Image (cartoon, rainbow, N blue to C red; front, side):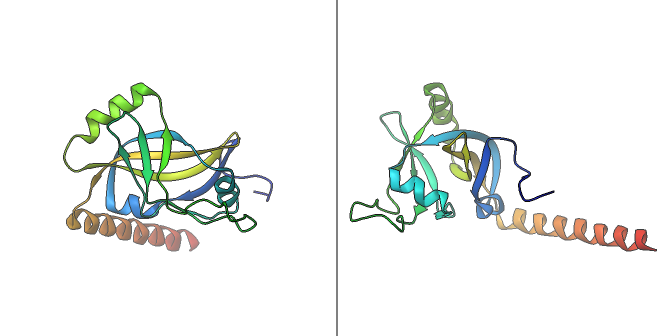
Length: 162
């Protein structure tokens, strides 16, 4: 694969992923949402200054969805009118998607967590996951399964080398 080719589909340029979310939550459903941003925020994100680790989304009473805890560093070449790095940001979803999410997040233990951020046709998109928190036992089982898979791959690779 050359430098000009990427593994992502055409028109999609990945920015960041929230690996912590995949470790701490079971992802039940995924959906794509746009984000309402300021101009300097977009420039900062294009430089790679976006972190999703502490982020979560919440449905407000007025029927809107906001993204909290996502940190976007101020733009390097900005001025005194730069944005607040951790301000709440409005997510752009269709009304039917918001209604569906409202019913699903009402269940105890379910949360909306940002999983990925990417540019699609020049617009920033956030992949939201409807997630349920994992227990410590579940995390241990995942680690055991990954370790067993890794050891099996090593054994197969060692066997094929002979």
